[in-house]
Image (cartoon, rainbow, N blue to C red; front, side):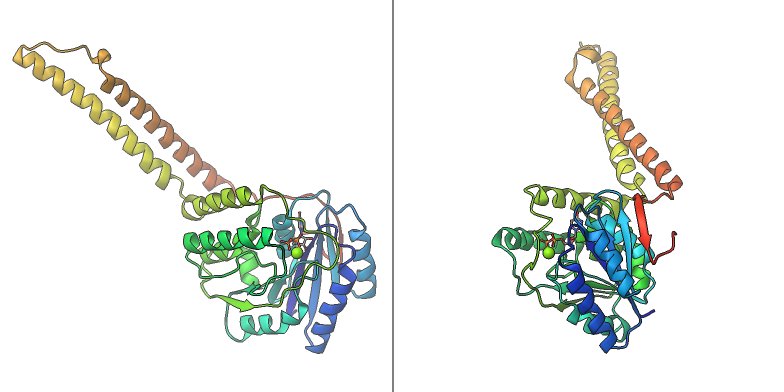
Length: 321
Ligand code: UDP
Ligand code: MG
């Protein structure tokens, strides 16, 4: 199969028929063998019934239905697990991304050898309350990940199949897929300017005030996981040793001071009356704690092969994996 198009959908029943018809038009014109995997992320409208009806008309349309709303990242994650195409393209369900971009994205992966291509909504049709935080976010993400993309969060992206099979999405990680791909060893990450429309039906599912805070915390988690996720000892062990040594050093110093005082016959203050003693003690205890945290993290990292599991209620046209 040439292309899998993965579409997360949360209450998007109005847009889906139009979107599927458009994707079908493009793929048939280009003679692609394709599938459209729509993940119903616990919608409360008739999204699932719509997917079922679309699948009846065109068996390239497949569906996964979550038992509840897990979020865009889990939806993409399950879509990635199910995808069979050599190139996997993700697209929002709300018709803001144009299926006309599919051939160009496909060619960039297949002919130009990109591992991943991210869309760039250069001209954006969203309210300022979205575009401004987004500019800020992209600046920080660029700096922290070292990937020179303008638009990390664009829903329209294309991947070589191996990329989606080797990354795991959870929380709100869909914003950082380029970073996940890079850290998995896929280096050729490109960008393509894409058309962007205003939302035609329904409302945005990402409007909350906490969007920025969550995004930032996710970025911290990600940086941490990227750098130390598989080797927590390198961070905690190092910090712990440092603290422990500092505490030990202070204790040594107090002992030497006391011995010198005894040797010289001068007066000395009791060790437990000195601030340094308590500082040293605290540092040693913190050091041991950090060291233990690192060690436990290391054990967990070694023993867990578990991935996130999301409860799926139904599937259409897809085998249970
Ligand atoms: N989405 C989802 N689960 C959610 C929230 C959003 O699957 O919990 C989907 C949504 O249906 C859409 C895509 O993610 O296809 C992007 O969402 P939206 O268009 O609301 O975001 P915006 O374009 O406003 O950033
Ligand atoms: Mg949208």
